[in-house]
Amino acid sequence: MSTPKVVIMGKGKANGAAQIQTLISTIDPDTIPPHLLHSVQVLTDSGSTYRVDKKHFTKNVKYDNIQDQITALGLKEDITQIEIILDLDKAYAILAMTTDSILANAFGEADSN
Image (cartoon, rainbow, N blue to C red):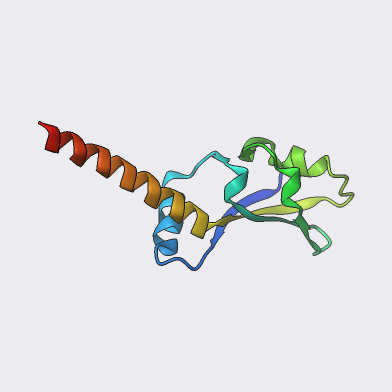
């Protein structure tokens, strides 16, 4: 059994979704929080595609052991590719809130001097 290719993709409709996709591809995260998962799919050597229920990912998804997590589900076929699809709308909302908070703190401190 060979090691499957892991692909990270994004899905979203928010105005900033394209920018989030670019950001994610730039920083290349090694873990993904489960609340940012849209879905996980596996492709097998027979050409079949299976969607893995998100309930199986209760902790951060780590690339280096995602194959073990999926194999534990009992799939009998060899996996050729694992597709991790991120919810870019959720990622955008989190980034926007975090940015707003940072800027509010930075400008709030400047006003108090």
